[in-house]
Image (cartoon, rainbow, N blue to C red):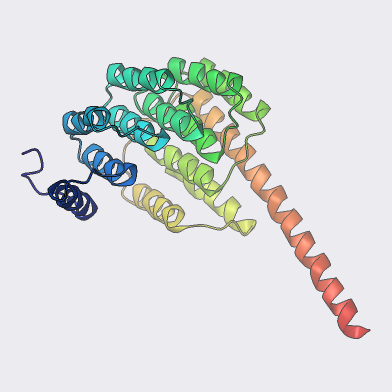
Length: 269
């Protein structure tokens, strides 16, 4: 059986429930089936996940958006674009339209696989379909932009800015990370210090990135640096992020100050 090898806890429970239901003559519901497909996809067992998906039709169980998104995610992580496209086509054929999760999954797969031309087309398709991008969309594309050829990277960045891109801690972290990866740990430190000056909410990842940058400098780690124009481009992306976070922090402090003055005013009356 395809579950003969060790399985994760939740997947094991779902399979046990499925077998128990089958013993009693009951069919698993969509929730249980989605857990099984998700578990198999996470373990890279796409053939088994596909078998479970196909078996749904024989048992009269109708796949939902979660089923399709789970399979698409599994195939994207396996860099299987043919199977990904097949699942998307089946999704359309059964009356399901991609949601923001579908697009984010596909964008992540394309950006990770450095297929930025297709990622740009996917971004445009998303907008044309009337789907509203979220911070995951922005950060996924931004991450791809950092390793793309400069000319296209600049065009995509212009699109993101036009779409009212809102940076957050994830944006800052991925840019700090790219400075380190591309042989510029001193810039990770510099921008980290600037963010600290505006009381930026560093998380655990931010701190680890700063520590890594310090170690790279101390150990004199030799990583090839990008051309000057790419370095300037990363600085530009970081500046846009820093500027937004700085203005947002200032606005937040002003609002807190106004609230405090109101509390004092009410307390004194």
